[in-house]
Image 1: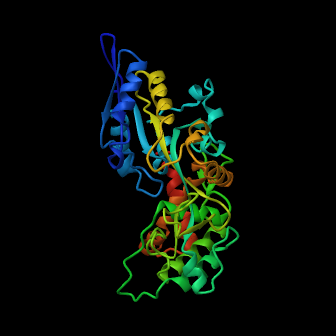
Image 2: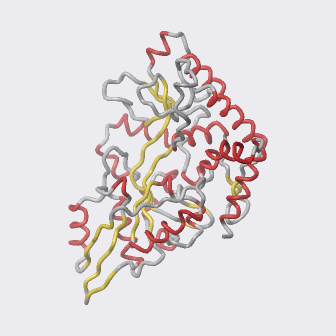
Image 3: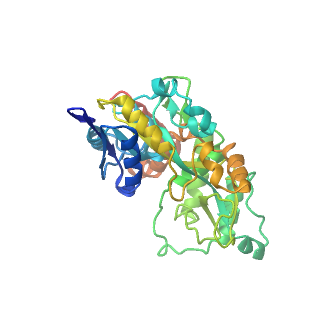
Length: 366
């Protein structure tokens, strides 16, 4: 697999996910080829990374291995770069490359450290959005409600949702829809990641009194139908969504940091297959991709922010100071499974958290 040689020619294969098959433009490929004579860049479409922490890992590792064998460089959502997947050995640790590179100087620090854990550097970030609460100020004012505030607790959020959300009958509820944005809210409210960094590999730390109490309160809100849509209905009076200087084009919505005072950090990730035959060239292409601008995403590198209004840049940089790096989001999706574990095994919340925690730990020693 990987970089194929034909005489002096080199074919560099780049895997792109099904949801972003058009993420790399032909102009970019041509520019890289011109700068690297003898190199041809080929796109491998529908090359998605699937493993998330809450999945049954045995069912997805085979797919991830197949795709890691299909290309030298792989593009992914940062949300899918899980701790368990990086432990498989399918992807290169980029530490030796970034240590001999000045690239870090151009990155915002929280973004640069996002994919660093277990003494490794697993992906180069590209393209980012920040996630907070967006809301309709008029809806709040009509009900005399205080506007969202970073100092809000889960109880404050629940009170606002109860006032703003029409009561749903059991026949109207459509079932819980979990979203990545929710996990940012959870970690912001919990005030700490669900990671035990005192051991390597870092392990999940789910079954604690603080987490159990939080899950109990969140479950109660879920049962009231307050978070059925995953809080991502951007037409609702309050939702989780991207933070931008104007929030929406017509400026009818405002935004706040998440309750707990943090912001979510959505990014793309560029990985290199451990099976590549030309790791240095693959890294050069990965680095090249970080220097491009992506539609509907802010750049991750300071030098690319010059096209944005100064006030907008100040806003983004201020929010980045409290943004959650991807490394702090590890194991957060495990909380999605609490309801299932309780239903199937009739566990208490604490028992469910303990079982999920042990299952995730076992994944490192498969």
